[in-house]
Image 1 (cartoon, rainbow, N blue to C red):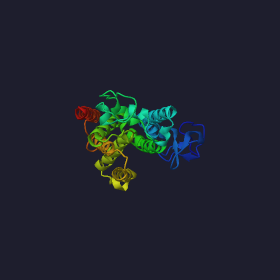
Image 2 (cartoon, helix red, strand yellow):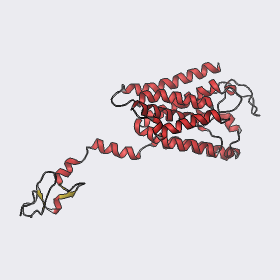
Image 3 (cartoon, helix red, strand yellow):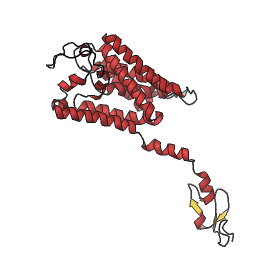
Image 4 (cartoon, one colour):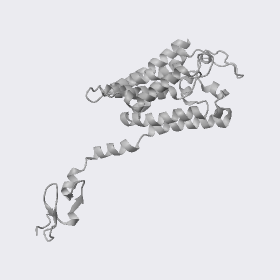
Length: 284
């Protein structure tokens, strides 16, 4: 009988299916096919960087969950202050935080808290975190959960924040350009549309037919709903989608057509700055 390569005093009933060395039962590890000796099993393990990447890809999407948490917290705070928030009615808090060209110009919107100061630029951001009713926030958070996990795993936390903020501000610019009525706009849908369009562009650049995926179908359906259902911010959705698509073209470029890493940070920052400057120029 051959003896174990690590324990010369022990007889080996089997051999490593990778290197062929005889080994005792204590020196063999079950493998996908056959058994490997301890040395071969160690050599087959991925390096530390690969193991960390595999672990994080299935667990860590903290930015997505943080954004969802902020949206839910704001909604609960508004509902506690005015129960009409739950049913979708416009409240004074919506008027305080929502976006409207008339409000930014300091013009009357139909609420009692007057005068409304002009140029409250914080509304460009705060409007992206208010919602009108349970159905509104539920649908936005569901899409944010699905798309955010996908995009954040591809880009990492920092760039996920950048593309989300860029899409949100591009959606606010779209509201000021298109939605000229007296209504108050709000919701995460502009930023969510940006994530959706960015992911679709990224798939297209990789040679994937986006309409054969859930992302393409969802994007097309939501565009149709945007233009067929009244009360939906057309400017916010389209603006967010355009901003996200520009970011996705650069940030989700395929590996065989790489772009400089700095460009994946500079592009969403540039989109956000253009949206801010455009918003200021429109309001005057």
